[in-house]
Image 1 (cartoon, helix red, strand yellow):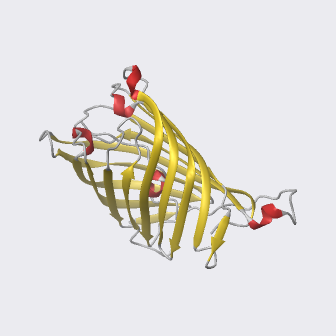
Image 2: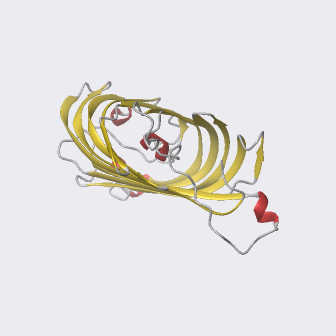
Image 3: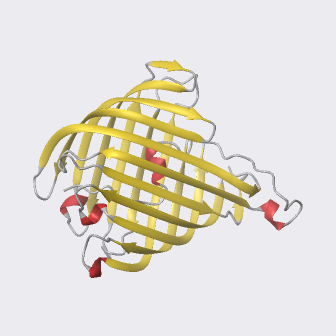
Length: 277
């Protein structure tokens, strides 16, 4: 059965990390050391039916992250950012890999490009899969490399072909200690019609996943497509969509096709200090 895993900056998968702009908030700490730093954060949530193999299973995911950029160079294109984060996942069928909380704290080195970002991170994470036995509650070090790139972002009214891709490789589950997990995602859309702050976007998407411990839920592919309404207003971005997804598992051979219905929401903020890139 498939898992939908909380990962650092999974906001990038939703195609919003490069879309939403951090907001400048007035503060009292002018002309201090804090002005040379950047205190930015992000949150995202995703609810819906994402797995045809997990038939009729509704999944909810949320992620919150606060960063403090303590070092930057090359016109802010390279930054070092300690962060604190928490991810929460639960579903209606009680699968252990879909019911967990993952608080973490760590540091990332980020390299920004014109159309994306590459991050290398390490953190301490505590993972509690509360629907599983006690041994599925543990903490440990996590390491990962991730990237996100987007083109013709949907928030720009001049663009017609919004798309994005992300990938991650690392050991980022304390419960699955030592498991090297690789995931990748690509989506391409077409703006059919715009109105006010929204757009109707038919889309196609591909998700691939593999791990070193050969857990069935980690080794799969999902191909699909549908249509979504994308609403962008300031730092808030929301998608409402429906489509068809075809899922295949490489280990067990399980395969299914089904309806995907989803709501994605994201928001980014800038507290004070130097404006983040």
